[in-house]
Image (tube, rainbow, N blue to C red; front, side, top):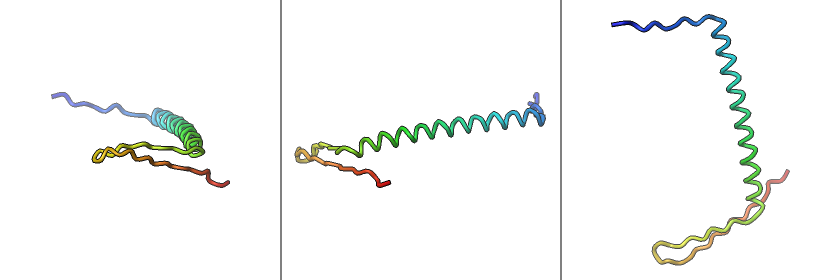
Amino acid sequence: MAQKNKPRVTEGESALDFERVKGRLDMLDHRLDNIDSMVTAVAERVLKQPITLNITCPHCNKNIEISILGSEKPG
């Protein structure tokens, strides 16, 4: 049976791979920061106005209204 030989990695290739991974991690970090900013902006807009949930009880069929009021954090 043939054995699989792992290709040897030189120091230069290893350094290039490390830089490539570092660049991708930086790009991912930047994207996650952008997503965090968008989610925060949406949450702040939602908290400025009341949210009302209308739920029907499955047992008695009564309508239940739940209102959620938010406020902005100071500063």
